[in-house]
Image: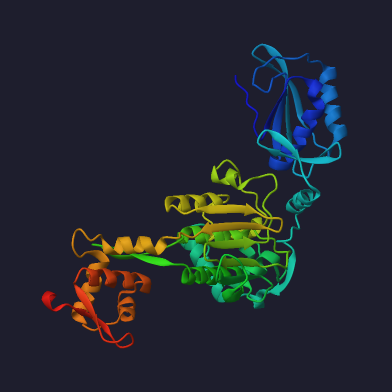
Length: 449
């Protein structure tokens, strides 16, 4: 039989390490709520055994009782492993945070880390029946956006994650556990009421800093409306390119839409709603940032989620569950990994930053995004006219005298790309420009008519 230490299993060579074992018990309880410890096994997994008597069992039980608070009631038994006497301790508890010698620890891999007072407060809040989400708000059913609630029920039914239809707002909100004695709980208020303090600040900046902005907008309302308007703002202000093929025209964004959607829903799902600071969308010349005022768990790194080796630690589990039922969240704890994989597949750099005030996702914009577009549209010059060059040439042949701006509007291709294509066609002797700068346009050369 082989043994390995992990987040819920600790191995100790003997009861001489009883103090360290006590710390491990509380760390595991605070992370998972249950676990086991073996005495008589090295951390390499080798069973070496140790003396086991009734006095030994009592010593372990007393040490656990005296030094772990709140009190737990473990199962302690003598077992035989590879013909060696060992001790197995099974424990569980649902009253976290648990203290060992007056301090709080949390299990990270096979390591016990002492945690900060702030994290202790979060553990207390998460374990409370009356968490922030479930507290009574100042809103009632009359404040609910019924249209949004109906759309939500329809979407959750389509996702096959609920099995009831909309009958009344009261019935639906009760089933979703978002109402109590006629009052919405806080989660329900932010999900389905338009009048609340939640907002997203969206802005476009001229350069790489916040000195000069080109556009600014405050997005307010219920969570679903804010999500939709935030997504629309991003899609309207990022760059797009067209990929032409025999199957038609495909619009390609500089940042994968799926990655943007995941970053947005994560920022709203995991924000700290007690913090008056809003979420932010910032579009710079070289990057796009999505920020939320919710600190990342101090004992976990973003890379742990990218690797898929860590479970989700939800700040707002009730809110997250509602978004999961409508499939706005595909799977708990998968957001960062999905963002990373989408960007990797599209050769885009993305960074996840832990800040003192919250969490930031940064998408780095490609410098040659439009250049890549030109290459795709032109199809190369060696094979004659193809792709974008052919489209431009054919349009000019139909509308002699057409201006570059009109070509861009007709083909829905960026002006910069059109200018490059007409320059190439002029250089190839296929077209010519006639008239003044203001009134002139492009014509097919006589020999090509």
